[in-house]
Length: 137
Image (tube, rainbow, N blue to C red; front, side, top):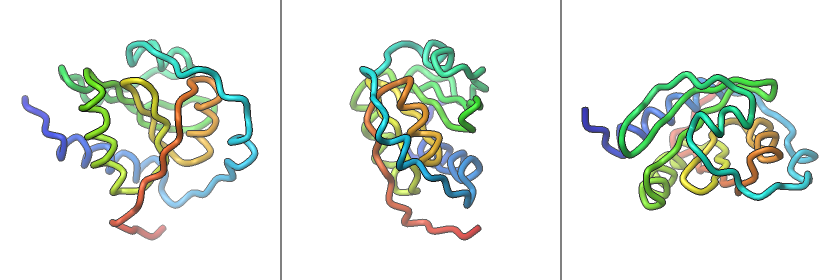
């Protein structure tokens, strides 16, 4: 099966909407925490670092994507074969809003509180999407 960026971004956006709903979180205090160097490894390695058992949704040569849940909440975790593929996916997915924790060839997507909590373990940089497809909740 061939996965296009648009299909994968749409899948991530749908997962993001399910995960974040309309819940708000106060991640400001957590954002001030000390951030470790960005983690590396497979999707399973990253999931183990944050103590979640990934439910694989996409297992392709270019991307592996899973839904995870841990004590911080639910999030999407994805790993990429290339830096370019990762950046294209993020750029497409960010049109749907959300919070993105970005490391080298991986991204975690969830609400701001979850992303900032994950950052305390995985490191990385937080990017915020622009929701052009506003939804209410």
